Structures are given as structure tokens and as C-alpha cells.
Length: 527
Image (cartoon, rainbow, N blue to C red):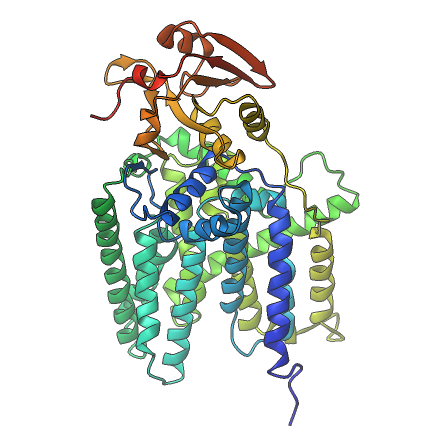
């Protein structure tokens, strides 16, 4: 009897150490990824929840609550580091590492060890640009991978004639419930493809999987409905203000759809490591770029093969078809709705590289590709595959550094703290970010000077903010950045708040200092 390559007790230990190494690498890689006010706001929300305000009473949220997806990880970051930029680093490092882990669990059973090598070589060392894009919505990508893993377990039990544990169904419903209550993107990524592929199996009159698919649809719908109820209940208890999801109720004009497609393609090349302008073709960097581009093309071909198989031959590999269909549904949504304004919006599909690696590994296993031979049946396919994968893995490695990349908000926070300027205002992109950079030693609230209800003036910016921030009588200064956001200019500040007692300038900022009590001069405040 052939002995296994690794004893059963050794392999889990090796995997554990491997994922610890991946986490450490990603943690220090994320230290080079700058935060911004979006993620600083999540840090502040997590701190509020840990201080007892779990339902975020008095808060104004964005178009998504992120309550059960991102915020648990930010709470872990705040528990370890407090209100600190490192909380953002830890939260995202945990989420990305777990995405890689559950992607690994989506690989087929009884596979070649080389498939594991392919998977880790293509996922364990994400690029700087990919990590930058994964700062947002990583929680819902993780939940979707967990959902697919639970479906994989259900399918394996069904194929083996086993009765699936009720806990697996419960876990699947729970993931959909928490995901729906936190981030609407779980619908195109997980819920819709599960329903579509399951319906196709039912229509195909596949008696072997018909009832299984009906149950899967039933539990998917139940999870969505419970998620909607959970979100509404959470908001009702704390009376937190969830801003309208305006992006989901309008369609793009055709020219905008064309522009979205251009941004989408360029973004996909970026996060796949296949985009590098001005690289010499006949150079090592050019060879790496070409290999990654060809790999991306192969992945796209496999993706569409899985989608087609899902609707023509749904029994081939329904899990792969679901994952691939989710990617197509999400792409269609991003093209027809006003999401892709620029490369910063790549975050909506930044899980694609991980999902495509899962698909290519499942395709290799399904087609027994590693068992084939080339060059007159003399050379095993494993040799060129190992060579290419090893080359790409080595090329993806970047030396890590323990130093965090400083931001302008770090310098601003230091200046304000050293000069006793504690309570004031700034635009959104420099308010919450500076608060976290100062480790909550400085308290800035976001303002806008846009017209609201027919009135122009210094308005509270009710987005990732708390109402009480605008009621502090100690506020006595306004920070204006060189690049104005929402009409936050020096001229507007002086026009509506009066001549300041003092004006100070540091790199990138103008600080206008007044007597305490600026909060009384704010307009368009909530009654």
C-alpha cells in the first residue's frame, strides 16, 4: 500500500505554519498600503462598538453597514492596537489571509499536491496594487468564499450519499444572513449564482440533484430575507442613519458603460499583475508580464467555460460554475451601474484573482492535466507547470519592511497635537483619517460647503460620522487641504465663518484658528 506523501499529523502543522507565514507577509505588506478616511471611519466605528455602543446610536453610515463583515475584524484590530492605523493593517491582513485560506478549502478533494503548490504560488504573495484594492469589501469576499465552501461540503456529502449535517445548512444561512445585513455585494457574488445554477439543474430535470438544488435555493432565499430583517432591526434599535444606496437605482448611459469597460479591463490587468506600462518586452520584467498576461487570458477562458458548462452541463462542476457565474454577474452589474469611476473602484471586484486561481486549479484537476505528457509523450506536463509556477512565485516576492508608510494626515495629526489644536473641522478625507493617525488625541469632524436644502454654508457631513461631533463647543479651527473636497476652500471658510484669529500653513494644509464655539455656526444640522 502506497504511503501518503505527508503523515496526516504533519500536513495540518505545515499548513498552519504556512498560513502564519502568509499572514505575517501580508501584515507587513499592508503596512505599505496607506489607509484613508473610509477605513479610519471603520476603526472609529469599531472603537465605538467596543465601548458599548454596539448599535452605533447617533452614527451616520455609508450605503452599507459592514456590521458583520468588516467591523468584527476592525474590532480585533482596535482590541490589539487601540485607535491606531495599525488596527486597519491587522483587520485587512486577517481578512485577506482568511480569503486565501477558504480559497484553499475550495480546491477539489483527492487532488495532486502540485495543485496545492500552484494555488499558493499564485495567491500567497499578493501584489501591492492588489492589497490596495482589497482594503474595501474584503469581508464580503471572505463571507462569499465561506459560503461556497459550505456548498462544497453539502455537494460532497450528497455525492457520497451522506445526510448533510444541519449545522452546515445553518452555517450557510447564517453567512447569507450576516452578509446581506452588511454588504449588498453578497447578492451578485454568492446568492444570485447559487440560485441561477440551481435553477438550471432543476430545469435539466436532473433527478439526482433536483431536490438538493431546491433546498439550496430555499435556504439561499431564507438567508437573504433574514439578512434584510436583521439589517432593518439593527438600524431600528440604534437609529443609525444608513445613507441611501443611490448607485443601485440608476443605469449608465451607453458612453458611460464603455468607459466602465475600459476601467474594468485596466483594473483587471492591474490586480492580476499583468499591467506595467513602459516595460521593455525583451527583459526579465517583460517576460514576467507576458506570462502573467497569458495566465490571465487562460483564467478568463476557463471562467467562461465554467459558466457555459453551468448552463449546458450543470452536473460537470456546479461549484466552479457558481463561482464563475458570480464573477460574470458582478461584472455585468459594474458595467451597467455607475460604480467604476476610476481605478480606485477596482475594490468591488478585487477578489477576482483569488477566485480565478480556484477555478484554474479545479479545472486542472477535473481534466487530469497534470497526468498528461507532452513532446511525443516523453515529458510530464508537471515539469513545465512547476517551472512556470515557481518562476512566477519567485517573481512575486517582495522584501517586507516593518515601517509603515507615512501619510500627509500623519504629519497633520502631529502638528495639531503639538500645537494644542484638538477640536476642529476638515473635509471628509482629512477628518477621520487624522483622528486615527493621532490615535484619537485630535478630534476632527467632516464639513461640506455644498448647497443643502437650498442653503450654502458650513454643513455637517453626515457620512461615516457621529452627530455629537458637531455639537462640541470646544471646536475652534478648520483645516483646509490644498485640493478642496466638496467646496471646502479657504475662501468659503472665511465667507461663512468670518475672519480667523490666526492662519497657519503647513505642507499641504491651511489651518484657520477661531475662538471656541464654531459648532454654533454650523448650518443644516439635524433637528
